[in-house]
Image (cartoon, rainbow, N blue to C red):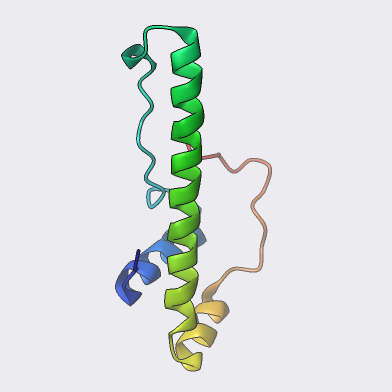
Length: 93
């Protein structure tokens, strides 16, 4: 998996704005599995697959950032807010 510098910048901007639209997770449909055992096994596989995919996305993002010139990276760091989210910030739905 590769992420272009433009895609990386868009993801980083969303992270800065506490938005999570860049996290694309396939929806698990339990109705496709007739028994609880099959549902559990399918859900477990779904979770493992989606976790692996997210790790790949983060690794690709890090690789793309690392390939940027130092000045670009420092410009990004300067734009990152120092404040931490407050307890009243909403979690992604």
